[in-house]
Length: 630
Ligand code: BGC
Ligand code: BGC
Image 1 (cartoon, rainbow, N blue to C red):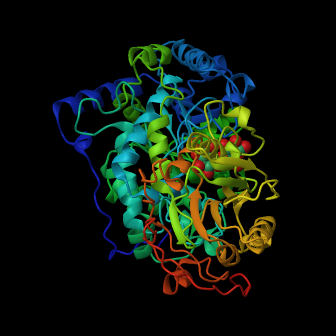
Image 2 (cartoon, helix red, strand yellow):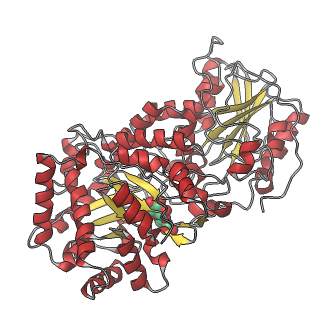
Image 3 (cartoon, rainbow, N blue to C red):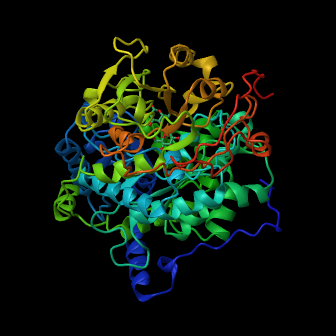
């Protein structure tokens, strides 16, 4: 890897944890002592992270496995509705078994994708996805959300979350756009700091990583938002300056705030896979930046770097990956790792460095102690699952972006006759999107979110209390002529590459909402469109056909809070205004998926978002379809 160019100045991000102090020295001495007591096999075991469905607690203990994870849609005992005590029971048994061996036993740590709340867990509050949080620009609120998420994670016995995502999504066709806070790297950096502090606590304070805090992950390092055509796991072709000043800004902020884990990215940089990129993972991240935590691979990400699995493991570890996340077949990966160390293809120094980093992070998180996960949860008195409604409701309200506001439709009077239509109006799963109980966010019903509420729930409550009436009809047919129609539509849930698009023309994928809107318009019924989406899309026809247009992003389980903003109070006054401002520029044309095409001539620029008292004339927008980007 020879991209190194000395003109790029990578900032040192060391924190007080790296300072030469007596306390830090005691911790380092303890680590060396443990390291010296470990066999080669035990060291290699620490470098493996296995999926909970592919390993038993006993096998994990026997092999000194360093970590486990539950992938998206993976639950204790295969039960989607597993209770908090189920999660704790499994966490405890992995922990117990990891202590159950000779010499210095090192407790195992469990990681999960708590990316918008503790979203794999039944009854957890799910917050808006990052794109919605970016629209709030409310960094204090993000810190609170992250702190609430950390409590939920600790309550289930889990030590570590694979969040936040530091991506700077530059092409809207990318299926992970919604995991990014913004296309503006400076916004991403501010969000990064807030979320890291919320999850882990403040580095310089004694509460750091104690009690109800969890380890955070700065992911994915680096450049994943810049791949050609927005292809997931693709190639980001750019100079080192762009890598540093665009794609790394969030990581730098996260590391300065004390992020302890970095996840390597699936993508390549100028044709070289990140998982095998020694310059970026070792020279830059561990060298210039001074990162003293550990690098975890992405889901089997190490195996993508070479067709021969052993070579792939060797290349990844030698490049700087410290822990291998293995979906299945951990035993095979472990054996190959051990043999590669024995043969000298991976040096003893490299292994010691990895294990030292892993032990260091466990020690900093007070996870070398024998305290059971359930004891930790009880000590922090955590009864928190499902209890973060009011924080989530605030986030939902503040994330709504008003793009069009005509015909005096907003705010809606609570004594109006309201028609609610569109297939997103009464569906928590559509509000939540991907990474919600299941990996893709599909195969969920409202019953899977017992504490959740839908947009329709919120509308019904307001209108019923305000003397109006409400009719729900997905297709927009009504029995009583309404004063106003709220039309809720959007993307179907997806995660990762499943969400990659050929183009960003919404109605080419979903034609029904436009038909509904046009029918209502023909009937002279004013409409408020509410779009559920993981990214800006080309919706000129839908904008033209709507009186008002609100972007709700993927608001999560507290959908009823949207009604707080859409409706006036019963006395006609307003409590909440639209506060969301675009954290991505909005395309004017269907061929503006790419940031550089959009930025020059966006329909709505970054930062756009109306207040309810503003109603600029949008005029008739061009509905001419152009082909997608070439
Ligand atoms: C994703 C990561 C995630 C991991 C574990 C991967 O496919 O890229 O973001 O943390 O799976 O679920
Ligand atoms: C897992 C996810 C993971 C994905 C990667 C899924 O089966 O549940 O956690 O990110 O595979 O492809």
